[in-house]
Image 1 (tube, rainbow, N blue to C red):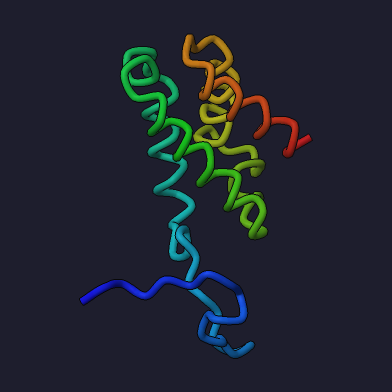
Image 2: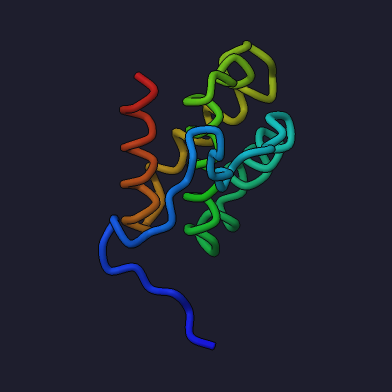
Length: 110
C-alpha cells in the first residue's frame, strides 16, 4: 500500500482547532533535561563525539524556555548554573553546526 502524498495544502486532511498536533518535545521533564544537559555539556569528550546530541539537548532547553519553563534554567540553582556554564563551553567546539546552534540559542535567550 502506497503512502498518501499531498501535493497541495488543499489536498491535506483538515485538522480542527481542537485537534492540536502533539509536539516533538511535549512531556519533557525540566529537571531531567537539566541533568542531561549538565552531564553532556560538562564532558568535553561527549561534546566532541556527539555534537548532534548536544544540539538536540540545547534545542530541548530552548523549547522549555519558549514554553514558559525558563524559570527552571534561571532559578539560580546549582544545576542551572552548571548548565549555563556548560552551554557557554559549547562555543569551543570544533563542530560548526554545534557552535552555530549554540550562538543562535544564546541570542534567543538574550
